[in-house]
Amino acid sequence: MGALDGKVVLVTGGGNGIGRDCALIAAQEGAKVVVNDLGGSLKGGDEGDAGPAEAVAREIRAAGGEAVSNSESVTNYKSVQGMVEQALDAFGGLHAVINPAGILRDVMFHKMSEDDWDRVIDVHMRGSF
Image (tube, rainbow, N blue to C red; front, side, top):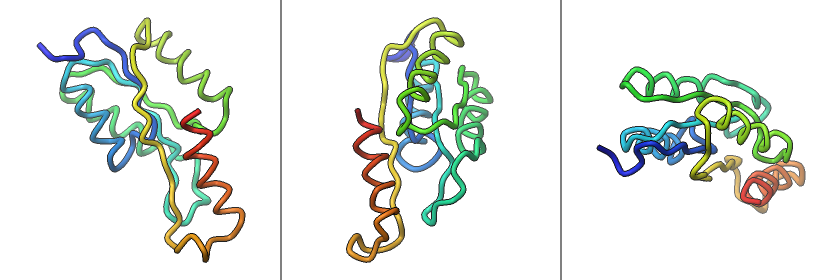
């Protein structure tokens, strides 16, 4: 019996890093998990790759848990509403959101382009909102 038995958790940025670990731990504790990850890289430009989110959801299912994947952006309000709707449709509820979604660019902030800076701020700030 896990601490999250019967709960539904949405994990943003759940395809890699800290988000991946959060999704796996939530599932190990009994949660049904919506794994969200846009699928980007340090260099950007490859957003919309469902692979990382689906790989984690598959890993959860292979271990006997319940999970679905989502590759929408946390920067888009309608997409986030869709994540909530997906949780409701797939699992009948939503009890928690774990929000480690974040991006970075492999340069010092003062060497970033304005476009890269805007994307980082958008994910970290708008994504939290």
